[in-house]
Image (cartoon, rainbow, N blue to C red; front, side, top):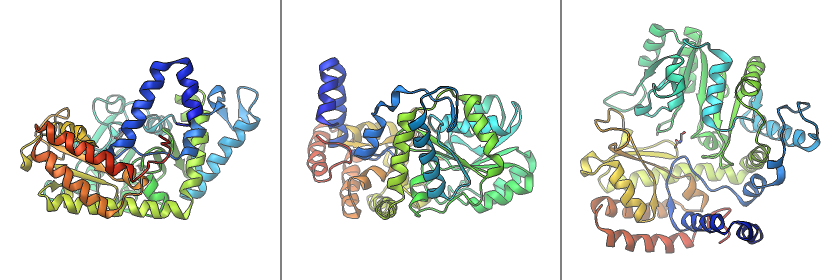
Length: 419
Ligand code: DSN
C-alpha cells in the first residue's frame, strides 16, 4: 500500500492497519498458487481505493436515478467500451458485484423458477451457480448436471448432447472452476442451437487468457458470456456480462433493477483500468506465460509422481489427485501453506471423499506469472511441493522451506505491493 495511505489508516485504526500490513507481507512472502487469485497492478489498486466509493449511481450511463453523474457516466461508459473492444462483444454490462450475481442475472434474464438449466456438476469442475443443489440455482430451477468421462476426466460432448436432447434445458452453462482443458465453445453452441437453449459461457477463470489470446474466445458462440474480473484478467473483485445485442435489454434489466442496487463505481474504475492493461501486448505475453508456467508446473509435478486430472493442462489450472500419495487434499494444502505455498484443497472427479476433506489440490499460475516467474521457477516450486507432500507432519521442514520461499519471492516483486 502507498505509505501515505497506510499512515492514514494507521492514524485512525491501528488494529486494521496492522492486519492489512501483515496480510500484505504474507502476500509478498508466499507463493500464491490459488487458481482464482492474482495481484492487481498499483493503478488498479489505486482506482479501487478511490473516492468513487462515495457515489451512488443506480441505473446506467445517462439514465440514472441520482444526480452528480458527470464523471461516473464517463467512467462506466469507458469501461463498457473497453470490455466490448477487448472481447469483441456486442454489449457489456460491467455492474455485477461478482461472478455469482452475474450468473444469477443470467437466470433472471432468461428463466422462470422451475425451468430447466444444465451445467457441469461441481465435483466435475463446474461452479455452484451452474445448478448445484445447495445453490439457489439448483433449488429454484430444475437443474441437470453433466460430468466428465471416468476414463479421461474430460467432458464428453456426445454425453452433453444426449443429456440436452433428453432434458431440453432452457439454459446451458459451459465453463467452470476446475477445468484444466480447453472449453469447446463451438460444440456447446451447436448443442444449444439444436435444443433451443440459451448458451452461457462462464469464463471467470480464463477471461484473462481469452483476452490475451491464450484460450479460444466464446464470444462468437455464446449468447451470454459471464466473468469475474479478478482472476486471470487481473482486475479488482467484480463481475461482467457480455452478450449479443438481441439480449442486451434482458441482461441489463436483470442486473439492475432485477438483482442489484447501485454499481460499485470504484470497482468499475478498477475494471476499466484492468481492461486497458489487458489490451496491451505485454498482457498478451503475460497470458501466454501463465499457460507456459502451468504446463511447466504440471510436467514437474508429474516427474515427482503426482497424478494430474487429465494428465496435464491447456490453461492456467492444474488439478492433482493425491490418492496415490496417501494424503488428503486438505492435509496437503495446510502443510503447503505452512511452507509458504498457498493453494486450495479441491474435489476431483468421482471423488470418494467429502468436499470439506477431498482427494485433490487445485493450483493456478496467474499470480506467479504476475510476479515474473517463469518455467525455471515452476520447477523449483514443484520440487518444494513434492517435499512437503511427502512429509506433511514435518514442521521443521515446512519452516525451512517457508524461509527459502521468502527469499525466492523477494526476487520477484508482486505488482501493487510496495513493501
Ligand atoms: N471461488 C472461485 C474459485 O476459487 O474458483 C469460484 O467462485
